[in-house]
Each structure stands twice: as C-alpha cells, then as structure tokens.
Length: 215
Ligand code: GRF
Image (cartoon, rainbow, N blue to C red; front, side):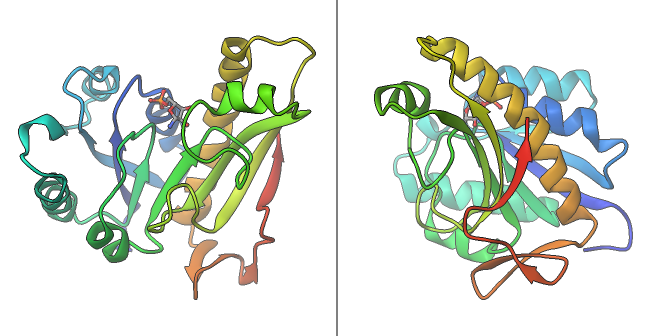
C-alpha cells in the first residue's frame, strides 16, 4: 500500500448500492475509489461513478468469445490501476483463478446472506424457505470457492414473520451498505489482512463466523 490513501478499484454489475455506500464513506474512511469497472454497460453504478467524478471502464463479457478472454481483459484492466484493494460490489460473474490468485488477500466481496448459509443467488427467498430466523450480509476475502473465502464480518437482521422476500432483501441491502464501508476502512487502515488463508484483525485470527456488526 502506497504511503497515500488506500487505492481501491470497485467492480460492479448492477445498481451500485454498495458502490454508493463505499463512495459516501470514502471521505472519512482512509481510502480512495480510483476506478470502477463494470461487466454490464447498463449498470446504474456507472452513472453513480460518473456523478462522483470517478472514472470507469466497461468490459462487457458478451464482447468476448470465451470466459477466459474476458477474465484476461478484466485482469489487465485491474492491474493497470495498480489498486491496493479490489472490492466486488454486486459483481455477478465468477472470477477466474488467475485474478483471484493474484489478488489473494487484496480482494473483498459482499454477499447478501449469513455465509456459509445460502451461497449463490436468490438468498432472501432461500432464507425464508429454510425458515431461518436471522439473515443478513457477509464480507469475505475472495478465493476460488464461490462465496467461500475467509469470512471477515457479518451484519445480522431478524427475519420478520411472513416478510416478503423483497422487503427482506431491501433490509439486507441497508445492512450491506452499513457493513461494507466499515470492513474496507479496516483494510485501508492496515488492521485487516489475510494470512495463511485466515482473516486477521489487529493480529488476531477472526472467528470463522466473522466479526458481528449489529444492524
Ligand atoms: C447486493 O445484495 C449484493 O450483495 C449482491 O447484489 C446486490 C445488489 O448490489 N451481490 P448493488 O446494488 O449492485 O451494490
């Protein structure tokens, strides 16, 4: 990490609510978002970046013949910005092994469930269908295992009786927007790191369920 602020590249695919939360917190959290990359040219997150004067790049995965070619182009685009940290924020593609390996310990993701419960998609309906009493969001280091990297922190919410998935999802999103900037600020300040595939905070191993943040 340079002696200046922690330089972050944020990678998106959609609305950019988490990107916006990271932008809004950046002025008082010790990091700078230097670039936004999207695989979706229609992502509203690109408009959010533009409004905040953050340069962006679109790498439409549909423009590439193979997944490997897209991954190579994305890898080059990230490397060209020389970030201290890559933050996946609503990014809906599975990253190739080269990017994940190269950015091991320098890549975070936020997932809308209490991992290891409900990796993948449709997490809110799955939590309801499973009869879970709690739900929420998880920030983890990215590894080759989808939504499976070392957990750093979670934000928990109670599921209300008969709550529709859409309402639950909206409350989870609010918890994500609270959680992600906090975790990124821990990384930016040097408190958070990955050592031998263990998430570490202030030199201590973070418990496997992560640090718990109350919404
Ligand atoms: C969020 O729940 C995020 O965790 C998931 O996609 C949703 C939308 O993210 N991956 P955003 O609004 O694009 O940040």
